[in-house]
Image 1 (tube, rainbow, N blue to C red):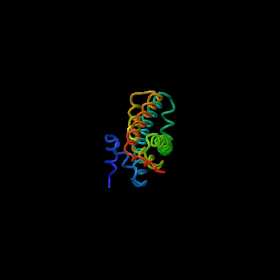
Image 2 (tube, one colour):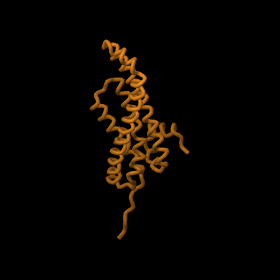
Image 3 (cartoon, rainbow, N blue to C red):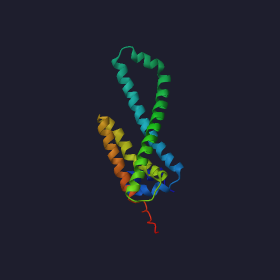
Image 4 (spheres, rainbow, N blue to C red):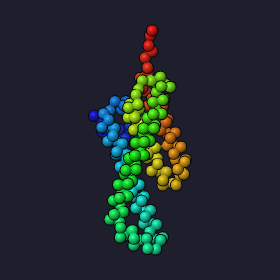
Length: 171
């Protein structure tokens, strides 16, 4: 059985293997997606912590207020970041999987939405990591979204080429 580390490395460096992972059990795929969500949440939480401390220093009185409620603020922020990251990543995977299903039809390949959803779960690795990197360089959200969209679609097309061809029916 393939490990999560192998799945991660293959999703980064071997895009043609993404099509083979369409037959993985859905539990393994969901685990992988939640690992990505956890990485994204931890990074976002660290940014939140540093952003709150920088803002608190600039505004008088806010620093004491944040100190007083940090026992409530930080766990709630962590939960909210995890929840929003989960929803956004699952919605993004679902939308790209629908687009990937269209690619399968255009390329005359066999596959279903559930297969493409699994493939997309691994194809979204690069864009997820790049979104973390883009936040360091203050790349505009429009440019970052466009680059991530192009990369994901490119990886889905590459993976779609490895799906089996549709059989021609004889009448």
